[in-house]
Image (tube, rainbow over all chains, first blue to last red; front, side, top):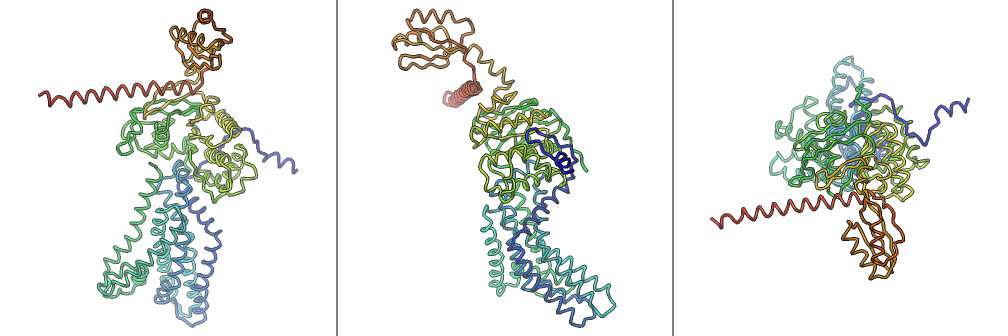
Length: 281
Length: 341
C-alpha cells in the first residue's frame, strides 16, 4: 500500500511538468498577501508578547472589573473611556511600530517589488494587501478585544435593554476599526522611506511623539494646535462617534480635515513611492 | 474564477515603433520587432534598452508611442491577462530572504493565481526540477548565489507561464552551474514555452537559443535564427604557418592584399591568421610558397556568437557616429548662416 502511495506522489526531478489547475480571482491574490503577512507577524515573539501583555492589561482586567460590578447595560461612556485609555494608545503605537516597520522596507531592501509587479498585482493591490495584513494583525488588539469586552459587559448586564447595548457594541466595532486603521498609513509611509526596519520603527515612534510634544507646547498660544496631536484626534473622534459633544475649543471641521488627511495623505505618498520603485529608473 | 489565456502556447511578442523615455533619455527609439517562439536571446551592451523592453512588455512602463502585443494582448491595456501568461526571473537579487524556498515559491504561486492546495505541491515540484533539495527548508538568506538563481527560476515557472523572461539567468554561477541552468532552460522550452533570455555570457546563449535579437542604443540592430547569423561569417578560415619572422610578415602582407583578414598574430616564428575565403585554398598555398613559409594548417574557423555580436555592434556604432557627424555638420552650416547674411 505504501509503495503504491509513494509512486502516486513521486516527483520526476528531470522533466518540466506543466500545471493545469484553475486560477483564482484577483481579490483572492490580494487576500493571500494579507494572510501571509498576518501569519508571519504572528510568528514574531515580540509582537505576541506585546499582544498578550496589552490584552491582559487593557481588556482582561476590565472584563473582570465590569462583570463583577452590578450594571444595567453597556454604557456609551464606559466604552468611550475604554477605547481611549493611555494604555491602549501606548500599546497600539508600539504594535504599529512593530508591525509596520518592515512592511515595505523589507521589500525595498530585498528588491522584491519586482516579484509582485511582474505578476498580475498592481501598486494599489500590493498596498491593499499589505495594509490588510497590518490591519488583521493590529485588529487582534485594537478591534477584537474591545468588542469582547463590550460583549462581556452586555452578557452580564442586569437590565433588559439589549438593543441599546448592541447599539454601543456596533459603535465599538466602528471605533475599533478606526483605532486599527488610524496609524497604519503613517506607519507604511515611514516604512516606505527606508530600507532599514529599525529606522522605520524609531522614525514612526519619534514622529508621533514629536507631534504630541509640539501640540502640547503650542496649544497654550492657539487651541487649534491640539489637532496636531494624534492621540487627541482619536479621542475627539471617539467622542463624536459615541454621541458626545466636542469641547468648545475644538473645531469640528478642522478635526474632520486633520483626521482624513492623517490617513489619506500618507497613503497617497506611499502609493507614489511604490509605483516609482516598481518601475525603477 | 477568472480564466486568463494561459493556454497561449507558442505565444509571440510584437512591438511596433515603441518609444520609451526616462525623462530626457530615450531608452527605446521606434523599436519594432516580432519575437518568435522558442528560446530567443536578447543581446545588447549595458544601457542598450533590454531591461526597458522587458519592463514595457510587463506593462510596468507605458511607451509614449507605438504598440505591443503578447499573444494578441496589449500589456498596457490588458495587464492582468498578459502578466498571468508571463514568468519573470530578474537579474538582481529580489528574493524575500526571511522566507525559505518552499514558502517563497508557494507564496509566488498563490499571488500568480494558484490555490494553496495546488501551490504547495507545485512549489516542491519546481524546486526539485531546478535542483534545490533539502535546502528548500532553510531561509534564503543562507543560500549561495547559484542556489538563489535556481530559486529565482523556480518562482518564475511555478505558475507554468507560456512566456518566460530570464534576465541574466547564469549571473554569478560557476561553470557547472551555468551548464545546468542552460539545460533547465532547454528542458522548459521543450514544453512549448516562449523564452526570452537576456545575458552577457554569449557561450551559454549560443548553446541553447534558436533566435537572436541584438539591441543597441534603443533600437533593433539585427535579428535572426542563430544558424543564419553564424552563417554570415561563412568562409572564415584559420591559417597556421611557420617561418622566419620577416617571411611571415611578407606572407601576411600578401594575404592582406588578397583577402579580408579578421585577426592575425605572429609570434616565435609562428603565425595564426583568420581570414575570409569562400574559394578553395590553392591561392593561399601559392602565396605561402612565394613567401617561403610553411603552411601547417588550413581549416574552416567556426564563427561564434561573440564574433557576430561584436561585429554587428561595431557596424551599428560606426553608422550612428556617421549620422551624428552629419547632424553636427548640418548644425554648423545652419549656425554659419547668420554670419553670411
